[in-house]
Image 1 (spheres, rainbow, N blue to C red):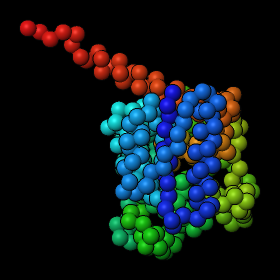
Image 2 (image 1 turned 45 degrees about the horizontal axis):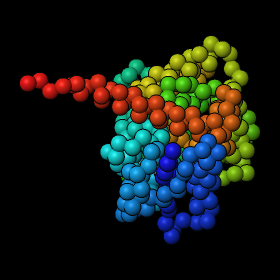
Image 3 (image 1 turned 90 degrees about the vertical axis):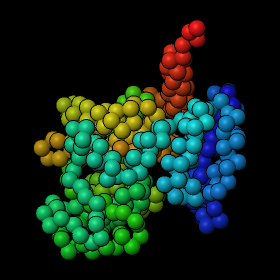
Length: 337
């Protein structure tokens, strides 16, 4: 099978470390596809250059690892929307869930409308926050992912700290989301299609003294940092079976509401002291690297990395077959006289 692997081609502004971070996963996926007998070709995506589209249209499958263009996450929406128009099967979620989940306020609104437990939230209007908004609160960019904009000062325990943090964030981001901070244990639930993977927990036992137990940008991307060492994943999660059932039920419902059980993704939750799960975020197409959370859940399910990649491919092809069958069923077998 001819497979195009799409990825962010970056720009001259990128450091060698930026390039290496993207290409490491691209090469992992290419190796997995080659071992399975497929013919993968690497195709970078650059801003204003649509040669990638011509090559994608000639493929049997597009393995989409393009999480933005030149590091700008909002362009991921456009790449996926364009892929939908080609009709070529592509991995990951459709345009709608990716576009919505890149706008946290909209995603939270839809999840809450679906009857799911979402912490109180509001968009910062200038520097104004409702006087009765619950504290502590966490402040994050409304339209970023991968913990961009989240650091040790993201959680605010006083009104003064909250106003200051919002003002600082608005200097760097167009829209800022303020959300009630939920204390307790943090869990991640991964999905490939409608299959739920073993639940993982992020343990904060080793966080630097005085730090809020949250997953910051440094924790995700600065290997060896104090925050990286302080956020330890445990998969499968060690928790009472009834708690895991509640977490799984809420996560599955959220995944269905946002992604219609298609593609692959991760639902992040907190469980408070009363045992109530709260949805932090739904993440379509999270990092697929061999050392990232979804691969860790895949190993807990009994898959090696190659098998995880092929599960993603199989979900894509099955989805394409269902769409083709549905389209054929709507076409009349003959034209009436």
